[in-house]
Image 1 (cartoon, rainbow, N blue to C red):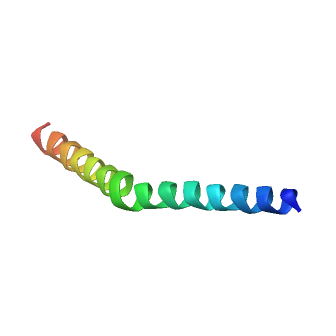
Image 2: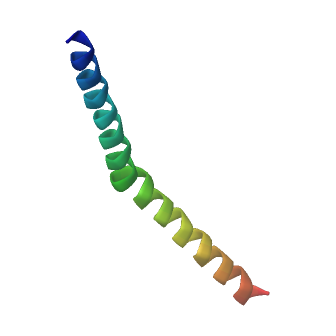
Image 3: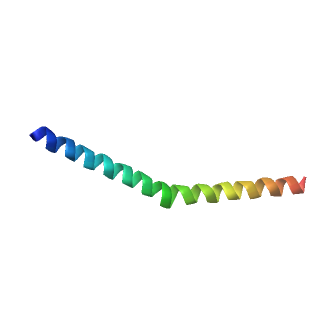
Length: 51
């Protein structure tokens, strides 16, 4: 039955990795990416008006 424990440990580790990746995307990367996209759009709009 040691293999059942091994499978359980691997499942818990994979769930933890997925949770960390999900939270990082929601709390760090997502807002940062949206902010950069907004700045890029504003810069493009500003350059279009100046020309």
